[in-house]
Image (cartoon, rainbow, N blue to C red; front, side, top):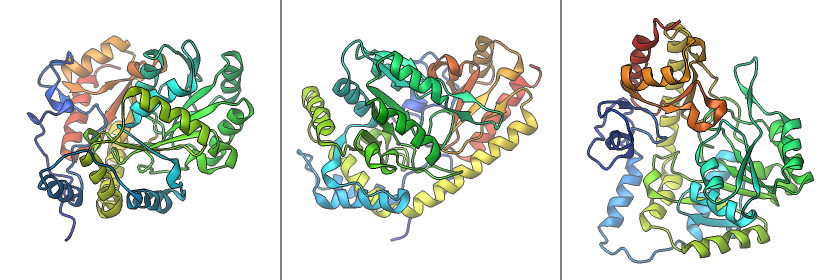
Length: 395
């Protein structure tokens, strides 16, 4: 049976489908008529193979406790080998109801209340939330924009923060959300060597690993045996195949002691088996979703280039940061000369767009907006036209 769901230009009405992206604007303080390009899910149908597998499983009519066996691991492993040249072992695998849940478990497993946890702002905002909400302190090694229109790491500050704050845990975002960096081998080795030197555990959120348009995604744990021993590698098909509501992630922890501490927190949280539909979706995605994946990444790559050209030609005072990976574009509005508050007012109430304000990614994100480009081209064009009409007289 051939893949059916390859028409990414088709606009699908997601309203009134219990959709967080479209149905909760008013509840979240937005005008009801905003066009949403915020939360990181796609406005595309997932692979028809996944759709069919879920329908077939639903027809069984029994939804008791479910678990997977070795073939599941083999399918996940083969995807990692094929796409990322990494061969994780079966005993390393721990399944969780999502990557953010895994981050929270790691914070609890490897730090104590009051400890500092290191991140790199501006970064995916749940990093800060799971640290603060669990009684730990956020410490940031802020990324800085270079002359090459990309963000970079201050390694001297990174090591100083580890020493000064007695850091035990570092949460790495790779590829980076929202600044779109795909870290090079050399950059990851520099970070890893510092962490090994100071005994820092690294939780590497690699959920966007399958969306790389410049460079190559490198699994942090794959670079050195020493890195493998300090790593918790967080993966999921949820971003790759638009399966966020399935609430499942594959977490790989090679070090037995770290794995034991992590599992202990899962037990304390009362989690055991995941939902059967998430397991079926994951196995089918990695086993049969290759054609859909190739097509969707090509479409998104074209969308990113479309935003780049549109921004350069039409959005005076707005600059698009180079997007090496993810389907989330980081737009710098500071050149408009407007205050952060005025930028956000215009985006929401004049352009009638629901984007992610850069401020939620930390102080370093103020004056930026994150836009999700995993949508039909006509929707993306509408959003960009609204920005043009709203900001064309700002500078």
